[in-house]
Image (cartoon, rainbow, N blue to C red; front, side, top):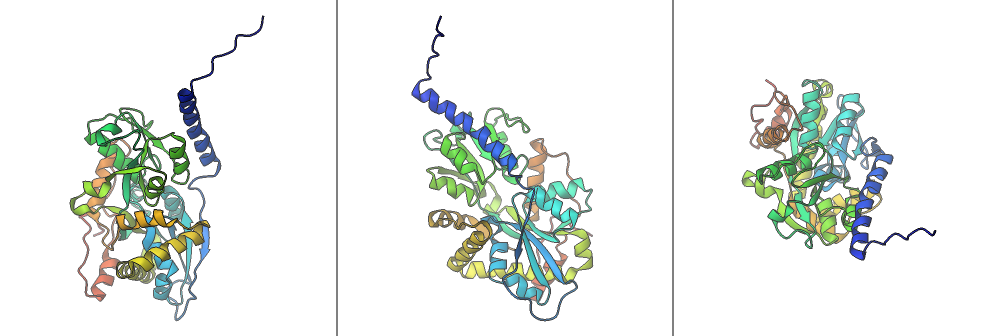
Length: 373
């Protein structure tokens, strides 16, 4: 007897099944490419000149990400190398905060531009022995963007699939905290609950959004603007949730042994960081182009004009590490169940930065009571 043919899903059901199938495949691809596990070495573009500082070479790590614009511009325009004089700058790019912390711990980088959550995690898990935050770099640059056909307003986020970059990363913590403030229950590990939190690497998130596998995302720039270019609608700028619209998104972090042995090098990098931020503020159009050119050099592809023009104005480049907001972010991670009571005492050492600021006649920054004494 011939087998009874199975009924074919209706067109809408087929689309739903196809979308549901795409995300696991994307995630498998993500695992296979070793997300966050490798750094890429980049040679400095400016020739070292003058006497060396206390080391021959300093290794600085950062992300090919617009919220790391200070480092992108600092290397591209030679601000770091000019301050380092005869000491050679070597840079490495990372895909994720945990891999940058591992590199600091292993001694393969000396200084890194890093988000608050990996800095807190790395410091706390080491018992306060592996790193110090010595300066700020950027605030903002994070938005909730959604598919306007599926999500009409903030209340409509409930019941939807919202992507964040990584379990426990800075944006993941921020979204879980915001969801809890709406009264929604979400299991932090699985991401399941009144809203589904789907952890998707920023590199493949546009594909996941395009396929319909997620309904929106709480992500940093330029990923948010890449989704906007795909038709997503900005629903919430995270800056609206913070007093004065300022919250730390990128800090300057140093391995403790390097800071103890080579404070002159740390201060030189901080001077380069300050000069990069000042140049960004004074030359916004040229700075945006320089950051995009450096991203192209690192990734092989520049951002389209519509993406960088949307993303760049959402980021504030600054020198203050905004220590009070890091303390608050740590509380959010603890409340979300992603971090046991973290060790924060001594995570900051703003003395090198304050020496640099004083030399320029500028006011000191505060450490919110979390600095070394």
